[in-house]
Length: 204
Image 1 (cartoon, rainbow, N blue to C red):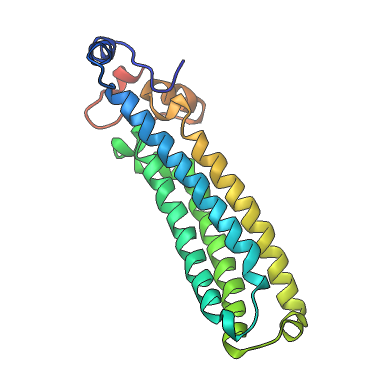
Image 2 (image 1 turned 90 degrees about the vertical axis):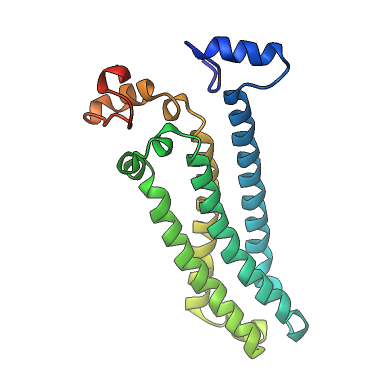
């Protein structure tokens, strides 16, 4: 079944809106969701560009560019998490304030965010310090710890970007938008709390 297809009592309203040439509420929400997914793809692409060129810009003439890349990289990383939170706003879990359920389902996103953020600050920080000091590339790369940090950060960055795209697209699954399907999905893990304003019987 389609994620944003109208069902039950909503069908008449959706049909009426379609007859008048106006998109239904679910159709409009689906379009906003798709735009946010596209924005996530753009942010990840720009993050990959910054990550790919940050260690190849040397010289005093490129100091400002190195500072800009440092700031942009941090901003992109935080922006990706905020955009993911905006995508969560389309799910019934956030709409009904089921924060414990939300944390149980997506806590790995926040933990992975902290891991990559720590590596990003470390990797870009030492690179920025080297740029400010005017170190030449030979001096900078003549360090085992720099090589190790570069290798680990780049591996984690690629994994993080790919995983965030996968997690973002997973929010289009119907179970995140239909309480009954969510309860069916979580039935094996224990009882699911009913959203505010809804009785447990209405979720069966």
